[in-house]
Length: 325
Image (tube, rainbow, N blue to C red; front, side, top):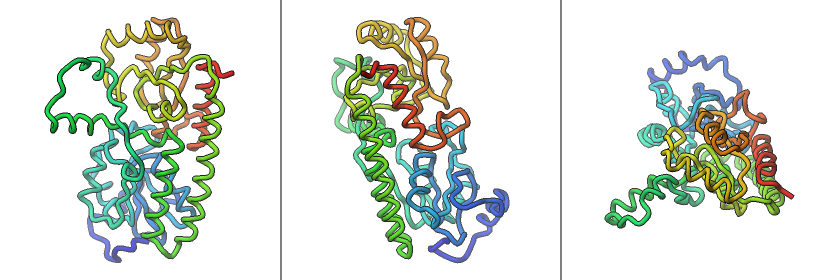
């Protein structure tokens, strides 16, 4: 559609040719060129953003994701082709602080509609769990340093809380209505339908996790802070917000002791990150392992083919691990 302009730059034409625009279909979330189609062209940073765009945009949008299926989104580097892709699109939908390379590329681009999902709800500071243990009792840093530390520790995993994800959906829907007013009524209808499904998912989680033997669950990295907070659970992560960081031996011993004290049965790992550390902890503490998917991408290993199916699989895994009654 490209409501911004009709002229296509030479760089963008080269990128489109290289990425094979002619082979694309509408509403694809593959990492492929968007822009200059007869639809409202949206570049999404990674799967949860692409899913929102597709659900809300329906037949009126052409969605492409900068993060390929199976790629760990935290590791994404934005290529020159992808920068051209952003430039030639009608909207960019991203989640600031999750992928710094995307933040920079979108901010530097001339794309007319920039939608930051982090600005559509409230991000909280769930912190780096290891850092919080290490720094207990230390004097506070200077005010400037402290605020910068808080900024880095703010948890971006809002899509794992259906209530917060619904808040983001409403904001994205409003942005689409404003940017593409010809289809505003359909965007509103689709947004309302998506929010209704997310409300139902929230009810499923609240009911399913209301009565459990334990309220503590162990994860590979600290992706489930919002989910835990929403449903009265406690997430204990082997590592902090960065899935690639290595836990200290002290942290591993601490978790072994906590597993005994809190009746923890299971260590959860995820599909896009190595399960080695989770399995080491499980072996040392005599625990089971299972998948709790942070839904940063859908692959053939995912327990479902879309957001709702994988979230329902997550609920089943949590109910089993926590001893739901």
